[in-house]
Image 1 (cartoon, rainbow, N blue to C red):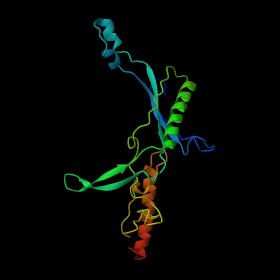
Image 2: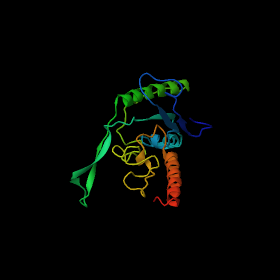
Image 3: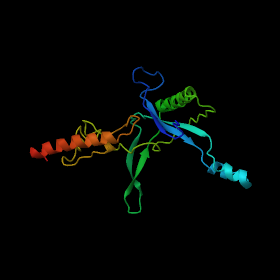
Image 4: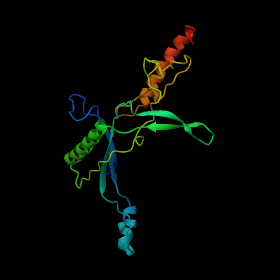
Length: 211
């Protein structure tokens, strides 16, 4: 939102399914966006000559405000990664085959994201509001995670509750591999917390000669 003629970014934290439940979908979303102003390049692209034209390209253009929603994808069993032994890379190493698609919950959330953004902009006094509601392809707005999920059963998970692999006691994975969902926010602080907890556990196990 412009403040004293300076463009600023915004963040709208999640408000759906926090205190009251939505009927249409589970979980929620947040918004990122900001205000900006067209620069001289907009007028420079127009045909013209002379003093008036030169003066026009010195003037900034109209203000604009944009909002983009980031929603959570539920953890589905149908979304997974497997090793493709038939398709090898340049070094004859098997590549990955990714199975991932949005469900009904994500599409319902996407529709609400568009509606609520338009309402917020209108309430803020915006004019000429244009709504673009087209859910992005999986992987375009995320921090990579998953493929080595956390769980108590070695048959259905790779890591235990300490980010320690079930099959190798001295191997820990403390990035986003253990997570099947990141909510709708940046998970980097969670990675740090998982790492700190795993390190504390590993040190304790080393002192007990368990590693």
